[in-house]
Length: 123
Image 1 (cartoon, one colour):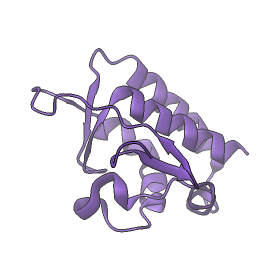
Image 2 (cartoon, one colour):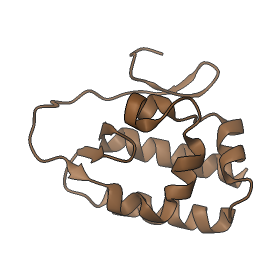
Image 3 (cartoon, rainbow, N blue to C red):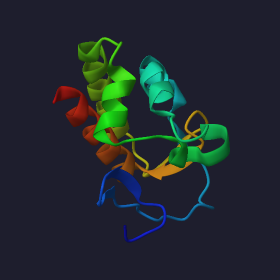
């Protein structure tokens, strides 16, 4: 971890946080994009609740992800994560926000997180 905001994805493995100007207006609200995957995000909310801790409420280690999708249609969620990735990739902004996750993200951080979750579901 180089930054206190880096996202833990395994022991000694992190998605590097990218800082940006938080005061810049008009982040893109991605909650509508997240809707088809909401059960997955709810299952990943293992350390606290997002309303309190934001992204830190979620577990992104392999075992957290496997547990979150254990009783879900994994093929469906991989397809929906691919769709989510495409929608996020095509945005013309780097600043994303989610009320559901209670966080602001740089687009590249969120894309790496989607890729990581997808990889864990596939393996």
